[in-house]
Image (tube, rainbow over all chains, first blue to last red; front, top):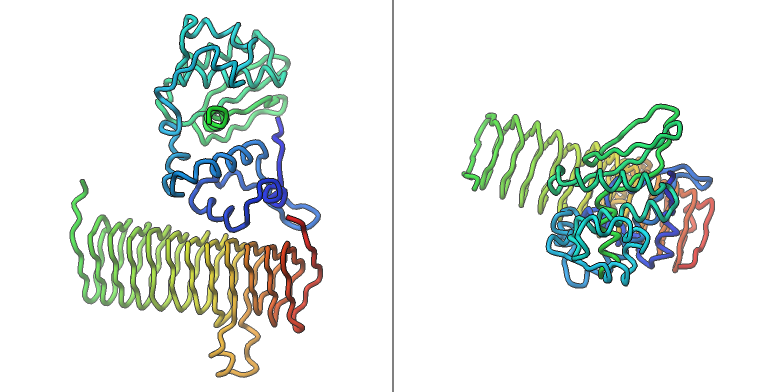
Length: 211
Length: 221
């Protein structure tokens, strides 16, 4: 899956932030180095960003920076375990109401996790991951079952560290890979990387909806 | 809790590095590993073959750090060579050579500067005494000026006092004697001696009559 990119100029136009702010946030590591993608365009070298992720990040920074200093913010963004809400629990109704998880996903996977009660933060993250891939039409329901089982069984092994999910297909057969970030995986020629999700992205997406 | 003590070096010496409170070097000292200290005062020649982390550094002479200089305040005169630099305040005159990126909140350098990667600072003030370069520059307020003293002392020899960069981006940009590919900013002042391929600005642009700008474009914010 090729991510949508946005050029630096478009980003500044869209969000109203200035070059100074962007470089300040980069220095403070509020925006990860890997997101600065250099490409040659007809005007010379241009910097691009993964569109969805950078817009969400900028939005979160702007929302949070009123209460926190940039250094505190950097810590918060870097450390997913604190950035996450360990004590969060949401009911099925809340998940639906805030548009976090769709009804289809919840009906299929919801009961399996919590017996109709509250969902923990980790469970919500898993639901968001499955829901995202399903709603984009990148995965069918059987595969979703597999993914959900994989996540539930294995994410605890990362013990709070960041992980990434790779969803690949080859000759019609699908696979899931979980790797600790940052991971650079190289696949052979016939393999198609359908989707790539990182815990940070999921958490950020979720935080955006909770705030 | 890490046990920190003071270190004082007089003459020629070497150290393995480690954690210190206050380090004072007068003469020559080689550190064979990482150095982490609160304050560092150097006179003479110092080499660190790992990273250097400090709250305060004051120096006169030469300093080379193989990996990274990181910390609060760095000020002094002389020559610095480092892999990467990331500090709050950098106030330095002399020659600064950085193999990777050089970052500071406030950066004032007069002398020569070579940054292979990105030069980034909230306020950046560069006074040219010789050839300077950085692959890319980014920040809020960027000002590059040639030294008046050197221009007066060596009339007609100012040709080598040029700052070269591929891309300069900031909010307030003021340049002199700069050769750059692209300059972008809200308020851009292109001073004497500049050769710029492309300028993009949103609010204000001024070009000195002796400067060359191949292409200029106003964009709407």
